[in-house]
Each structure stands twice: as C-alpha cells, then as structure tokens.
Image (tube, rainbow, N blue to C red; front, side, top):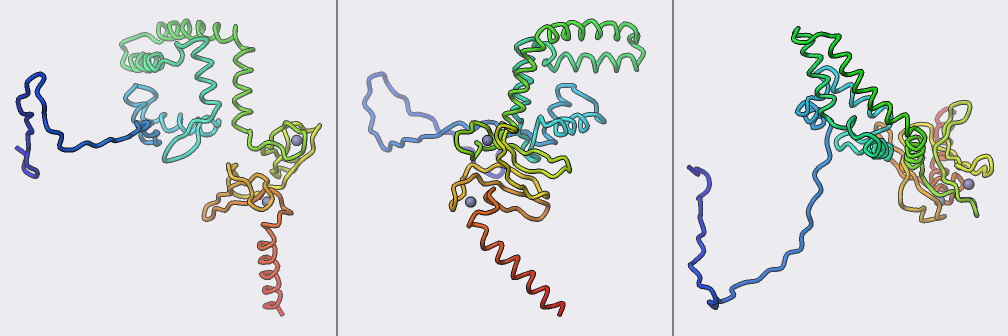
Length: 258
Ligand SMILES: [Zn+2]
Ligand SMILES: [Zn+2]
C-alpha cells in the first residue's frame, strides 16, 4: 500500500538489438561522492555500543579521555588530531591486534562472564595477561620509532604558523610563561626569540588567512559569548581602531566618575 504517493512503475518499452530510437533529452551531471558524516559524541557512543566497547557507564568517560589527551577536538562533529592518526598508524604498523575492536570487546565479554559465574577470574586474567604481554613485547621492541612518529604528530598538532622572523624555519606555537600566561613563541627558541602576546581568555585557533594590513598570521579567539579574528601583531595598524575605542571608553568612564 502506498497511501501518500502513487507508486509509478516505469517499464522500458521492448527494444530490439540494433534498433534506432529517438533522443528526447540529454543531461550531463557532474557530482562528487560525499565523505561519510563525522561522528557526534552520541553517534560515537552508539558505535561503541554496537561494537561491544566499554559499558554504559564507561563509554562517555572514554570519550572524555580522548578530549583530555588531545586525540580529538570538536563537539557536534568530532575531528581527530594528527596525534590520533599517528597512534593508529604506528600501532597498525607494529601490532594491529590491539586496534581490533574484537580484542577489547572480547575482554569485556569475559569480564561479564566472570560476573555471571560462567568463567573463573583466574583463567580470564591469565588469558588477557598473555594477550597483552604479546602486544607489549611488540610495542617495546619498536618503542624508539613509535616515539619518533608520535612526537612528530604532536608537533604537527601544535604547529601554527611559520615564524615571522626572517631566515627562521621555526613555527609559532602556543607556549606558557613561568607565570602561566600564554603567548606565541618560536619552536627555535632559544635560537629565535620571536614572541607575540595572546589574549589570556578564550580558545585560540590559527587561521589560514593573513592580516590584510600587515600580512602577519591571524588567529580566531572564541569565548563563551564572543568570537573575533585578530592579527597577532599588537602594533598592527588594524588595531588602531580598537585602541581608539578603548581610549574613548576609558575617557567616557572617567567623565562619568566626575
Ligand atoms: Zn623563529
Ligand atoms: Zn596585522
């Protein structure tokens, strides 16, 4: 039954091989396949449940850990950082077993079976110990190259802009001073001492566009209720207007006090 729309079945007319037919219309379409949508947090929790990873009470926590350790960013659409790809790539290269959802799902199942009294704790612990030792041996053997790969990816994630100093091949990354204040500093420090101050509040992200006034890199600053773009140079002419506004505001406040 098709209650809302009429079901039309279009049957092709009978055709014979070699028969000439009249061309009524011709259209050329160019389309591209879309990549699958990124996971949201809830979609990821569902995918974990389907694969038997984690439990109802731990799945959310596992995802929070991925955020806390910098493996992923974004909220509605989760975006993996370089470090996430590097971990998977290097584990795949050295021991793919640990990446298989079946391995974790199996351990999870065995733990349930202990709870149900179907299996002994001793047997399960021995089994998983054997399995994990095997994986660990592989990883320890390759620890140097794995470390190098991961370090490179962490650096890539932190990499923001090329240093603005002439003849410097470093990058400007977010660093913290001893007092905890953040600023942009060069990765070639102490050889290069280029720094730029950063606003201390809000999330700072590098932008691909360059400052239209001075050509220096631009950043986007996002807080709870605001978001603005700015040139990293505090002395850039693009900021004169801001400075005037703050001055006016301060003057205004003084006048009010009088
Ligand atoms: Zn530099
Ligand atoms: Zn500028």
